Length: 356
Ligand code: 5GP
Ligand code: MN
Image (cartoon, rainbow, N blue to C red; front, top):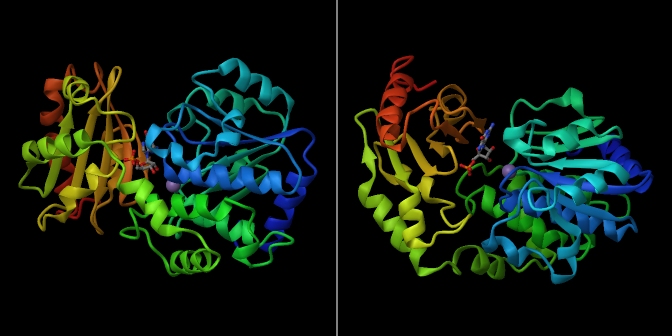
């Protein structure tokens, strides 16, 4: 189903307005700006037509995105990791589940919510922009990959709803801001995954009065000093291999020493791509029993395939992620650098160095 499919949009409107119970909105693990922006916009829309909605994230959103949430909304946003009991209860009474910004009902995409979403007996709706969605598990699915973000996809859907009819000025209060924020973070502020439709969305929202300067201020100019300090350290220690692969590894000790919080390393992985010879950038961050891996690539190299084959993950063609298990893939963190060099050497030298 495409975003401009008016029949699909009408079906979604029917499913929301006629839901036999509360509506649950959910998104991927470690919610980012797009997961939050699309979830908040959806909740604001559902409320505006007189229905009740709850957002249940697999785990809590990072502090630096807290500005997106209004104080009156915090009671309607639940982290399943923090309160699985409440999450289960809400699923028990729900009439509709809307899944945003993820493509598979699996533990690595929605954590402990995978069982609640998977076992839910009522209708499930998917609104997502990742390749390879599990369409068969949804009663209604909007899935497009040639689009910047789930927020942009939801923008097309919401502006097609009865009563809004293409006029971004008629979106419910706060929905435009949330969608603009989600699109901005997923495109890295208009640097990647930008399509003609992305500029049309931006233009319509600016015309409707969305305060982009205010959003950018919150997103990019309110970090703590230590974020820049640790970035400096990471860039200084970065390795660039002869295969055109840059990698940086952040261990627990360093994270603790700098007091770095969830969400504060967002964007680090993009920076090595500014070096001409770098075609694939890897950022590894130590977690409990695994290293969290972020991959970014230039056109022609598939970060998605590299993540799927060597890092237990996946994602988009040029922006992907995954995990390196300890023990499992490597014995301890001291082996991470050698692992990355070995597998990326294999990957980048396939098919005449095309990394595909
Ligand atoms: P990030 O590097 O920002 O954490 O993730 C970039 C993209 O990679 C995300 O938008 C998501 O699509 C994908 N991704 C991140 N982690 C995983 C993972 O563990 N599994 C899969 N399948 N995709 C992931
Ligand atoms: Mn997204």
